[in-house]
Image (cartoon, rainbow, N blue to C red):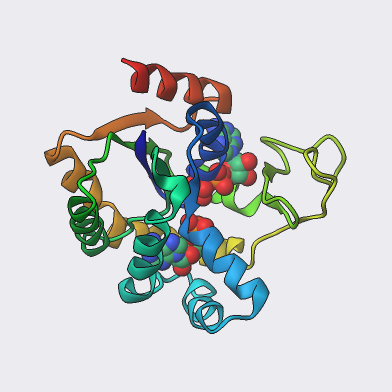
Length: 214
Ligand code: ADP
Ligand code: AMP
């Protein structure tokens, strides 16, 4: 299964990704996670990406596209993959199409998670992530059993630097301007699966898996 998760920041892409990859046994490729790992390791890529991420801007296409192209050629992508947060511009979408064409592969579905702006802001500012395993929580909507501690691995939870209210608003604006045109792009290709992202986490996953089976 070759899938893309599309949607504004805070829509629940990462949350759904964590269950979809288990169901289909495919790797989770999150460009945001790749950048955050590079920032943590202090790489040149991480330093460049951080300049954009802290401002709520997109990292330039030329930095993102080559990373994803390389990742797709790795062995664990042979049976499929789930792209989360990529593509984020039509230019990235076209580059992905080109790469898949060269690999003689096709996408199965683009899952588009819809959530209105006010909810997105509440979700992003309450988001907490495990420093060790990357599991995602929300202080109100999806809290861990013990405050500040990951249920899965016992790691410490932290708030992303770009989950401050002003940066979140900027990221939502950037989404409308640069990423939303991809909905039209994939609708024309007959690949879009629209999902109501305001439902409970389990109900959204059920809707996605039913649609992918059908
Ligand atoms: P994205 O990857 O699209 O930016 P996340 O998956 O990180 O979004 O979710 C953003 C925040 O919203 C997280 O704190 C997450 O726990 C919470 N969340 C995700 N899905 C739902 C949902 N269906 N209902 C309520 N909260 C949710
Ligand atoms: P995410 O974890 O998907 O919310 O991404 C966090 C940040 O990483 C974004 O706000 C961008 O600055 C950057 N980023 C992640 N994926 C991409 C992408 N495909 N293109 C450009 N920037 C990206």
